[in-house]
Image 1 (cartoon, rainbow, N blue to C red):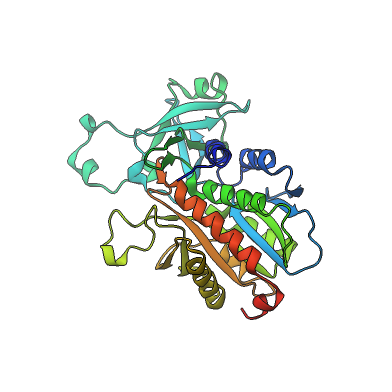
Image 2: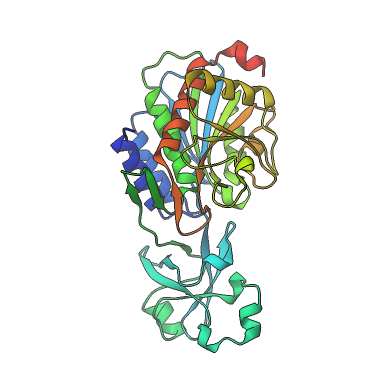
Length: 358
């Protein structure tokens, strides 16, 4: 397939942004750069970014949502030996963390490299090996030898964000992207790319894009955003955990290279069934690859959108990602492209009467 180099660069730049929940500034800097010609841009105090499409004129309003944060960590305290105790921001599997590289922001705004450390296996007793690993068992080593050195030389202080130190890589021959923060930077890129492709189009609905904050700690930013935007209908761009490497073939619902996944439900939301079926039928009509799913766990911003005063119809267009919420994610550009194609097709097709039918 043909890859849009600007879109790929946008995904690369967004993945590189150091922006766990509550610290979304770098994500928003990248979005501003790529979206500067798309309309009026505003930012609020919880770090939501609003992109209001040029020409919005009082028609039914579509809100596109993608969250700008990523899972990460925060400095809790500094131990006498100079290592750093940390807490998680969002959901992590502790077993993936030992020996992984991280970056810690210091008091000067620089990012200091460190290694997530645990007791070396040489010193472990059998009870240590058998015990369930907890984040509280781990620390981060930056090469310091004392608390004073960590604070005064490295200038590390409590409350600072910590992110994975993972480069972005794209294997063009096999259409494989690898990197960090694909949840939800690929969704952010899809939102911006969708709005780009709608430039100059005469639409029956208006469109506002929202890069929402703090999804990974409870969909907090979108609660502010949906109140401000007051949409009539919404699409959430997400990244979803791919299940194609460990699930029986008949039950796989989020394989990479099979198109975006549209969920009927998860632990937090039942997406509007009429809007969901409309989107799936339109994808089939347009020849856009998609996957449908029923999820027994997980959650997303759609839960807050559909509980707005209007009970706004919402669907989730999610790009499958292997090893989500870890240092190293895998996804396919073709799934990103299909998600954008579907969103553009939906927005071009919708009108007031169709929305009323949902």
